Image (cartoon, rainbow, N blue to C red; front, side, top):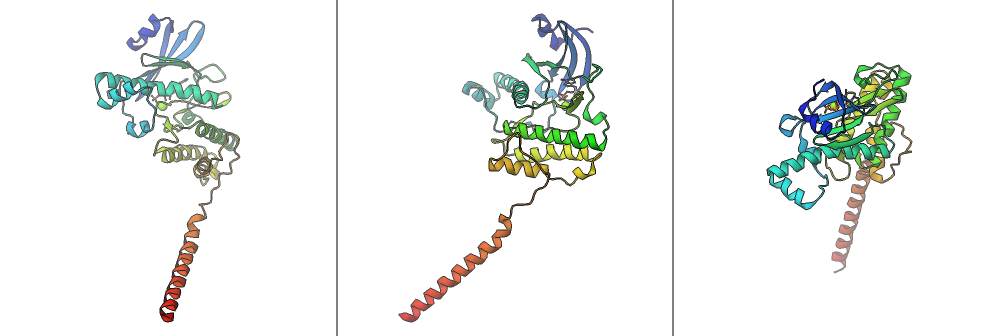
Length: 282
Ligand SMILES: Nc1ncnc2c1ncn2[C@@H]1O[C@H](COP(=O)(O)OP(=O)(O)O)[C@@H](O)[C@H]1O
Ligand SMILES: [Mg+2]
C-alpha cells in the first residue's frame, strides 16, 4: 500500500521496507503490518495527544519517573517542548514496559524500537501464520479457560513483581497465539508502588480476566485473585512462583478492633478505680 505519512521517516531510515496493510485503527493508535527485510513486523503509530481519548491519563501518569529535570520542568510548564516531551514519555513507556516484561517472563510482543511516534515490534500470529485473534474473538473449553486464566494470573504476578500494573487489561488487549495468551497495549502501564490508583487498577485488570474466563469456567466468577495477590505484594511475599488459591479472607485485624476496644475500656476502668482508691486514702 501507499506509505502512510507517519511511517515515512522509518522507511527513509531503512527500518521498514514496505507497508503491507493497515491492521486496526483504534482510539489511541493505528496499527500496520510491515515488512522489514525478510521479516513481517507490526508498526503501532500513536495518535497525537489531542486525538487520543484515553480516560484520565493523569491518573496513569502519577508516580512515573521523568528522565531528567529539564524535561520535568518543561512538562510541568506545558510549553510546546514540554508537550513534546510528554508525548515521548507516553510512547517510551510502552517500549520500556515491553522490554521489562519480556525479561520478567511475561509473554508480550518482542519490541524492536520506538521512533518518531511509531513502535516497531513482533507481529503476533496464530499457528497458520495469520494475525493472531484477540481473546475476545475466541471461544474456549472450560479446561482451556482454567489453564489460560492460571497463565494470566501468573503473568499479572510477574508484572507486579516487576513493579508494574497493566491498567487496561481486558480480552481486547490479549492476543491468542499458538502457545496461549500474549499481553499487548501498554502505554498506560502504571507504577505499582508510586501510583495511588495502582491497587484499584490492578483489581479491575484481574477482575476483567476472571469475568472473561468465568464465562467458560463459572468457578472463576467468585474467585478473589486480585485481593490475594495484592495482599502478598504488600506483605513483601509475592514472587513469580507464588502459588495462588483464588481465595482471600479479609484480615482478622478488623475483627480484633473489638477486643482492642475492650482492653482500652478495661484499662480505663482500672485507672478510674485506682484514682478513686487514692482519693479515698487522702
Ligand atoms: N504485536 C501485535 N501483533 C498483532 N496484532 C497486534 C499487535 N499489536 C496490536 N495489534 C492489533 O492492533 C489492535 C490495536 O492495538 P493496541 O496496542 O491494543 O492499541 P489501541 O487499543 O490503543 O488502539 C489490537 O487490538 C490488535 O488487534
Ligand atoms: Mg488496545
